[in-house]
Image 1: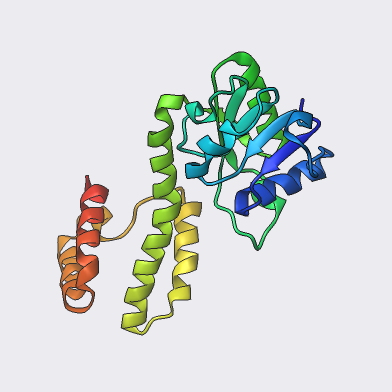
Image 2: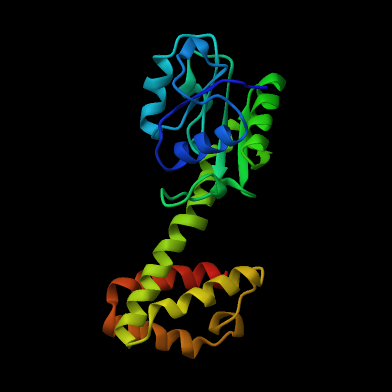
Length: 222
């Protein structure tokens, strides 16, 4: 549906998206706003409102933020958002989009059709999210991605302190995902004595992690 797309912002997400659009034969080179069918904002969330306000009304305008409401694209009425539910790195290219899901938010059928089309062209699997549910959705995404990094770093610190190789954690974490997140370990077994032993070890060697362990144990057991 879009033949000419102006991608604004070429960070980790914008560069992958621009590369994929180019692969699909869509013009993404230097294009003026008034020449584009779509102006796609791949800028930091805090910049979306100001960048959108500087675009002359006419083309479709969209953003790729997970938490930002569509109102940030005012005054544009032909608007939508497509949030790739994926983590990106500059070390890789458009293949990072392959098979990932995407949250689509639109205010009418025309916008919804455009958003779904764009998601599918990018190689994403679209699903709809209501504008008012974006922060709840994005919080879930942050827990799944950002806090996985936090957990790996915390576990690595304990492995380092114990003299164990932190890279040994990676197959364990991957297998947990491959096993459909089936819970194993002391909490699953109801082994309170082992949990208490963990807490004692943390208190002695990494007290800054004790609160995190307690909170996670409570949520896991609940």
